[in-house]
Amino acid sequence: MKKSSRRSKLRPTSSMVKQAVFNILGNIEEKLFIDLFAGSGQIGFMAMERGANVIFVEKNRRLAQLIKEKGGKVVVSDAIKFLESFNIAPDIIFADPPYDYQNYKKLIDISLKKLSNGGVFILEHRKNQTFGAEKVKTYGDTALSIWRKEDD
Image (cartoon, rainbow, N blue to C red):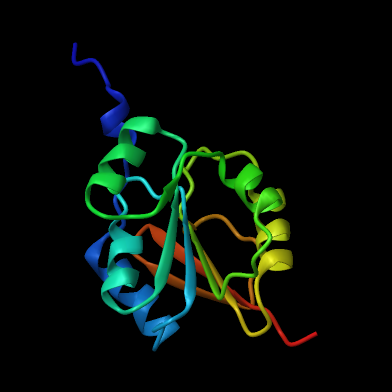
């Protein structure tokens, strides 16, 4: 019997979904981009390539170290704890929690409160889950729920 490792829990975002994220966002140059549940950091590094200022948030120290070694600014923290203590309004928050994540409501609520005016929150999740987003795009078994914070 094959033992499962922590590594097998990583669920990298598919190429199609990554492309869709950046098509949705458009020009992100000079934007503050928070990559929650960063994992390997693929989304955040793609955002950096497009000129965004990225903060990676990953609670697994080994994965966080790998992101740091590739040149990412990483915070080792639980996503919600990070957002609760973060005092700058990001332009974009991308969250790709594990599929068995239990705290979606709190994650969504705090992300929407923290965004800058006109900011975008994108949540990657299973397509059979719904969270009341303004827009939902589906790609195979994966869905992107998208919210845009209106000016106050």
